Image 1 (cartoon, rainbow, N blue to C red):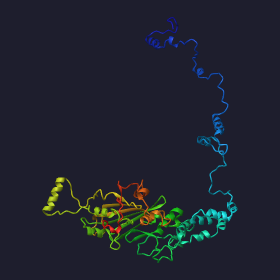
Image 2 (tube, rainbow, N blue to C red):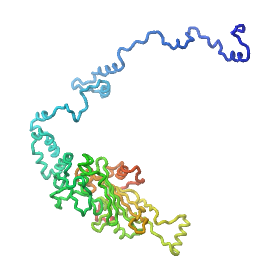
Image 3 (spheres, helix red, strand yellow):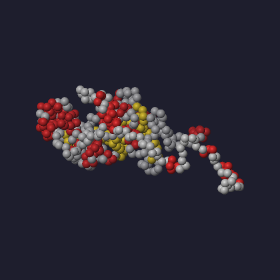
Length: 484
């Protein structure tokens, strides 16, 4: 703008305004370029023709590409040779309503009795010949048409002495249809429950029949049971009742929470608890008794063993003699601190030594076990884990009151099996009837104690190593004297 322009202004403000204004030379466009000062016109799309649309959509081209790949189909068998094409075809082809998932209960499904009746009895008998006696009898009882085709011979075959195991397997499959009965394995039949809904675990000297069995007094056919502690047994019938209630409903058995008990016998206090995990019944038994410090070996035996059968008072599996279970208990008893003589020069000597070491002697302090008796032990031949501890517990039987004493606590966790038959692997292993069980292979990632304790509390057990109860796998039984 020239000085003669009527809009020219003078002064300091106009001087700085003109100095900061962009130069005219910078706003000059190059030759041949198009520009507009209206930004709205610059943002409008061009009026040129849009690009032509493709002949087919991309998805349709993708479909035609894989539908035209007939060169990979075998002309004789009609099978696709390229597995990549198979995978792509599953995602490209349209869904077909004819291939719906099978429905277990379809009201519009036609009965299959007519199709079964089309096959001759000879053909059905030939099919059943490939099955074991349990499956053949189950096939014959599945429908009235198959029963007429196969006959009664498969049920008669179950009565043979060599097929007693198959007979038990066949009868166990009827549990869901018999809530008021219980399977009796010595008889091989179902009996009516006499204490339905009121079954309780009783001591061994108390008669507690759950059903009337003609073989109840036959010593050659005893009922399956396992030892919990001294004077307390667990019949296999209670394992059946707990697992039946878990599978089919409360009226088929008893709740697993009602099986736990607390009892005292021979100065030992016991507590049992049960839990179902992954279709198997787990049991925890905690036993404790007060122990005096400095017990000689004879007194340790009197404290740990019963005079009736020379079994431990606490819960133990059939392999407790083999290994280090009893030496661990004796080692733990040796860690109980002995009281000191506080009178005379000997007492003064102990006080001076404690003063110089900066410690205070307390006979009721917490006891620390050594590296031999502290770790948790697992029986390698059955699903049982043991933990031996020495704790400071209150002696409520003392008339003085508020008296705390050292006590040895032995806890056992075990797996009782699925409760279908006494011949199951876990039940037979803890009773010493199966020698092929390997507990470190079955419980390689997580211990029985961890599974059990995690079900009842958010707190976990202290960090304990799990070692083998019998690392050298010596099986001396009663011939060895280390256990006693």
